[in-house]
Image (cartoon, rainbow, N blue to C red; front, top):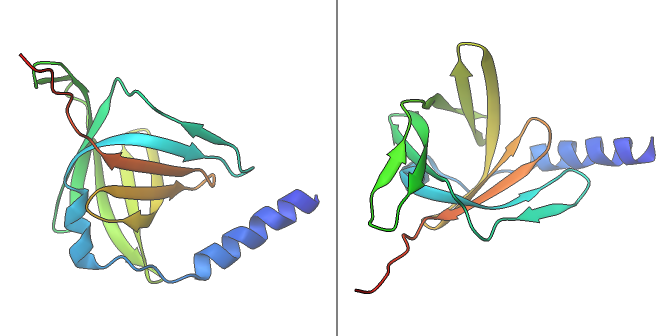
Length: 140
């Protein structure tokens, strides 16, 4: 019970913090990203050193989409036609990414964003940290 109280206290305190992310910063989301780490509500972390998939994000006027890609060594990407459409809303001095698919809706709070990294927290309290994808270059 004590851990549940501490978790909710953390969420309340965290939710009251103002974000330093501006609307102009949202353009940093455009591009290719790979997951770096997931931090779970209990404090455990999972680090990703190698990623078979990359996320491509494209936004325009607070709306956009996210698509999973598989990079290849020749600089091309393979993908399916699936994409997650979202809108970004400004709520309580923070930006939230709201996804909507036919059978599912969810949102993530944008916690950190700069030109090389970003982090989002989902409704379960998991913190996902991403870094800008750098393609592997094999010299000829």
